[in-house]
Amino acid sequence: MTEPPTGRRERKKAATRQAIADAALRLFLERGYDHVSIRDIAEAADVSTTTVFKHFTGKEALVFDREESTDAGLAAAVRGRETGQSVIDALRTHVLDTWLPIAAHPQREAFNHLVASTPALRAYAERRWTRHADTLGAAIADAFGVEHGNLACAALARFALEVPVLAQGRKDRRAAVEEVFGILADGWQPPGTPSG
Image 1 (cartoon, helix red, strand yellow):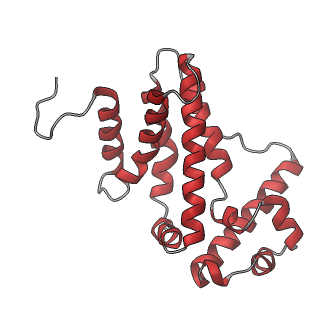
Image 2 (image 1 turned 90 degrees about the horizontal axis):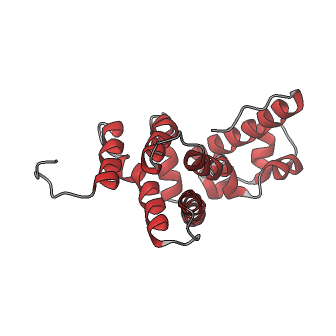
């Protein structure tokens, strides 16, 4: 979890960045991604196009405005876990704390449709997912003192990142997250098999 900016300048910068991201998402959802320019976004946010590019690397980054903090949050979940807490339990807590509020957001379905229906955004999301998997896999490897790229660590990272996808359409998302992390922790059992 990132700390809120404390200084006046940092708060102002964060507010400008958020205003730009909010304006961009609103316009993308209203008009479609391909029908919105950086200039449109700058005008809607009441900033210059130069200011937009000071905060975002490109148009795709405006849609995924929180992605930079995602990498840091994943690594911190593993590295900052409590003594005795397993990596899987730390990741479970992280997903429940960060993803459940996002999944419940009233614009989430429209956002998912925007990404799914826009090839450039789908490709960008896939690249970001790979980056998150690499970052998380490296943090898990560090936790166990093994080389980055260790297959078990890479697999756990990828499985953990798929949990929100698997839980998305479920009535009880929390229970779905808990169930999938239970499978990761305890191993898969055929449905209907008594546990224990």
